[in-house]
Image 1: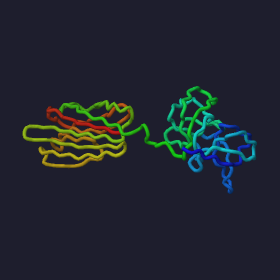
Image 2: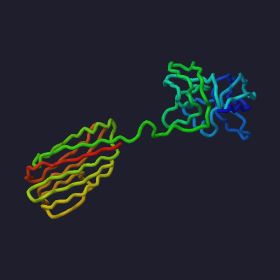
Image 3: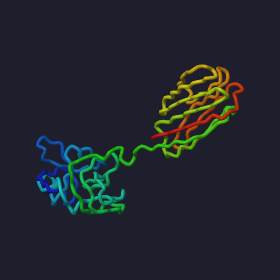
Image 4: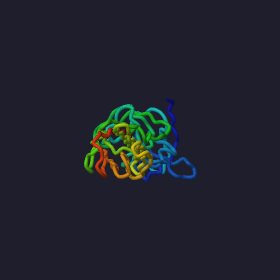
Length: 259
């Protein structure tokens, strides 16, 4: 990448030296830079990073690197910097650090630095500004499985470990129960706020919906096994209510969860 060196006024209130990171200052002339103590300063997006190439007195004009290679960028290594990491502003004036998810960045490290101080001086390439993708490293995680419940089980809770290490965004619960010549079907989904369930009972000769229960297994209007749902970072919890002397045949349950 060709280097772009610009002449800018140092308006930081102090002398700047080679390797110091600056951001565009808000002036009508657009030829002034200053330092920042904001981690991930959004001014990096509007103007990019400017790295001093020489000692420049306060209010004086001097040379700043805007794009291209440098071997003297000052960095903090409290968050370990690896080759290829994108860099943003640190909480100490003039210093860069590794960009976190969502941070604006101005450079890419060409050298690692992992010491917990602000004394690092590394090779880097200053780039056009951008921002770390908020979804980077997150992605979508999915889990599913099957379980059962006795059709005549007493009211109580049933815990299903989903293994996602985070509360799911969506959970689905599909239930099936078969009796001689009859079947009961329930399909439910929960998004952390709203429950939606649709059920069918050939024994009751009826269909219906629920916004309270995630699963409804209905032999008749007075013989039911229904459950509400709760979720956390570890489990799906079904809280069952049995009404009447329901049949013992097994309720087959298919579940899925997605973050």
